[in-house]
Image 1 (cartoon, rainbow, N blue to C red):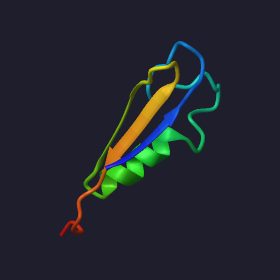
Image 2 (tube, rainbow, N blue to C red; image 1 turned 30 degrees about the vertical axis):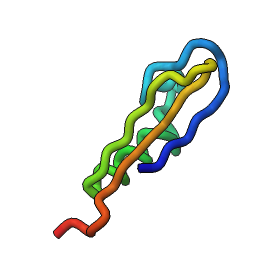
Image 3 (cartoon, rainbow, N blue to C red; image 1 turned 90 degrees about the horizontal axis):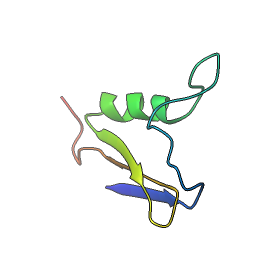
Image 4 (cartoon, one colour; image 1 turned 120 degrees about the horizontal axis):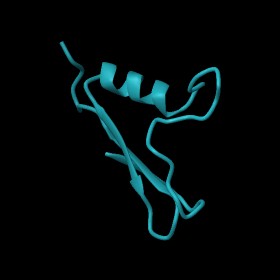
Length: 64
């Protein structure tokens, strides 16, 4: 498992959501697609103190 934490604003934004008019850009949405294509899972949760924690897992062995 990989885990990254940030200390940001007190309110963690909704996971995989953007306010950009043209889409999500090169952010968590693309990361999630790549990780899921390799049989993994990506999730985010609030951090204490404020911020976010993003974690993912991928299988130790290739799919197939």
